[in-house]
Image 1 (cartoon, one colour):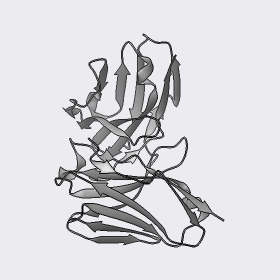
Image 2 (image 1 turned 30 degrees about the vertical axis):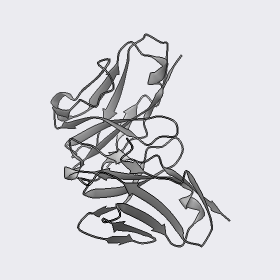
Image 3 (image 1 turned 135 degrees about the horizontal axis):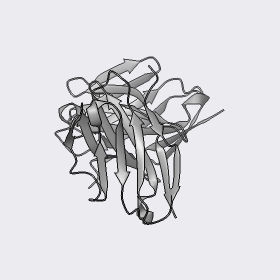
Length: 111
Length: 114
């Protein structure tokens, strides 16, 4: 069990650029989640995959946000035309049932 | 509309004493509750959970109590140790936390004083 792996750990981008983050879940976990955490807040749920099917995406923050999980393995979260308000920690989690295991996150800074 | 509330942003406790962290929720559909611990620059780590059919769950030094009528849960850490200093998040889910994900509180920063 190597845990949930996220790449990159840190990303600095200029406003208006597109960014993509990768998450590799624990291999036997069929559920995968993305969360966003801003300073002083708890993680905020964004989207959910069961295997390759994205079963919940209405909580994605805007149409600039999209996520994929091809073949039910790794997942990517893309933010298009980044804004300063997108600066946050983006967390990925995976689970078999009720107890998601989180990765260490990708910290995004938009300048 | 904050459905999970942790009203104490921080809590300072002496080493060896009991730490009690509190959490309130408003959504009566929540049926599973979890506590996560978070160190700086790391993701949250699962600590302990409780189903709504129980009122207590214990795991070593950690005990979670659930009062459904009051929509309140608490995490007790006995005895508190320096390594317990971290931010603790209360989280709740409905329907197994699948498509609804987890709803988190804002966290309580626990500081264990030597």
